[in-house]
Amino acid sequence: MRITNLDVIVTAPPAPGWGGRYWILVKLTTNTNVVGWGECYASSVGPKAMTTVIEDVFERYFLDQSPENIELMFRRTFSSGFTQRPDLSVMGAFSGLEIACWDILGKERNRPVWALLGGKINESIRAYSYLYPLENHDLKSFWTSPENAAESASDLVSRGYTALKFDPAGPYTMRGGHQPALSDIPLYNAWRSSTCPKRYRALCFIHGGNKSGSRQ
Image (cartoon, rainbow, N blue to C red; front, side, top):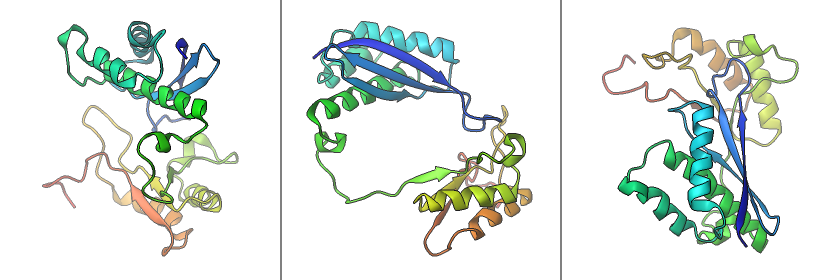
């Protein structure tokens, strides 16, 4: 089994784009028509430049290789040109391609990937979701609407999520995010009170804003 083809899919989060400028998915296909999917994290360059990096890493180190040879492909990618440094561009490209290889191996063996990585420790793991707008929500006003946040939280809970996450530190500028403000409290309270306090966990993502010395 050999890797023969790469597709790079650039996607964008819904308005106003607080989830990131773009997300990049990669699709690897083998000569036996097994398909693997991965995601390449890269926030330091634009999607056109990152697509070129992904294609370059693929053509140099993944094309015509067995998806089983992940360690070999990693060592070649990491040590190319004697760089041996974990930069966000090349290694970001590699990470998504590696995920796709594991996806291929799991499908080829009809086994979950965790079974190929040493087995499971826990019977289950907790999954969380950000608050996202529902079909009846206005995309522009959703992110600052306590009522919409509560409706989104209730919808996620009904689908089985036991932890919900929101981001009160945006929007972001060259000076970074802001500390959670008083104006963020109604938003938090609305969706937190819409779920059972004893069963569900509320997560606030502030991107390192709550550091020692910051105002509390």
